Amino acid sequence: MKKAFLALGLLPLLAACGATPQAKLNQTVFDVDSSYHVLAQPIPDAIKGNVPGIALTDTQKDIAKRASQTVFNEISSLETSIEHGNSITQTGVNALQTDFLSFETCWAGLKTGTTPDACAALGGSK
Image (tube, rainbow, N blue to C red):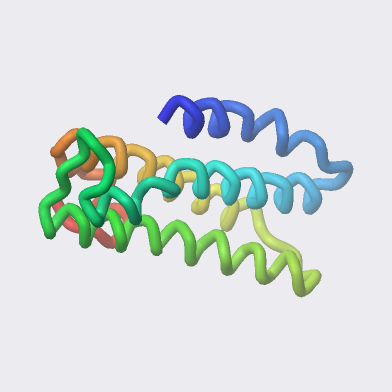
């Protein structure tokens, strides 16, 4: 969790590395992707019950999968646009960042046995 917060805290600094507005947006997508992978890495093991201290119900497992997939799909869509040389928008990047923060809140709650409202924002349920 500390890694995710650290990575998230560095996003604005890393995004500033691009020379053009489009390069900055692209870099932000890549930074969110990196943060997402750090945060989501234990989910498959937690779903299998292999992470000590995390006991998810079947409903919470489903919510974790759907919330994670929502953010992953959003990242993939933006990265595909970047790879094809298409411009991405600040609105799209802002939506990704908002969804990532919801995912972070959702996953943090699920790990502790609660189901935060943030999960519903990602297609999960309460």
